[in-house]
Image (cartoon, rainbow, N blue to C red; front, side, top):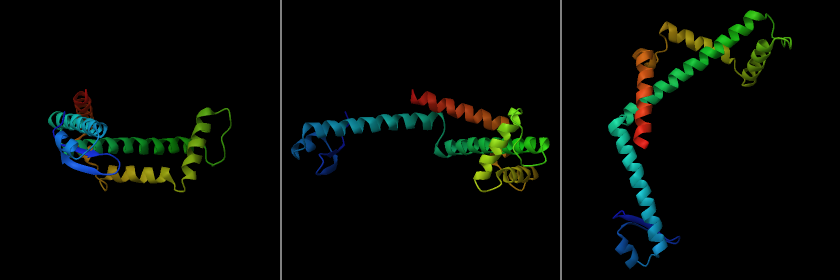
Length: 166
């Protein structure tokens, strides 16, 4: 049971009161019980967050690992987009629909059509972005740290967060 409560009964709210004070103010038992349940749930979340902070890292460290995860995922998706477009253009010199017997080219055609529907030439943008990364014009912290270190950090922090939640 939590000592300090924020109690509401639908028509009024009182913050930072004890159970006894809430009763003196005329709050019904159900409103006090709901406030205690909310306070207990918040205390449980705070305890989990404390364990995460102690075992998986502080907020800036977790944010950095999350940014690294997003960067690695983005680079992977962009590489796939560029590679798929290269595969499509290597097999065909036109943008006509491939024959139905070629399932891979049909899939590539559909993929390309969906990208084109976005309005921009995503394969060209993906290729340009990846070339800029390779040339050093765009710096990605995840790559500066080293892929092995980033993947290890992602795995370790992810496991530590999951462990702290159980």
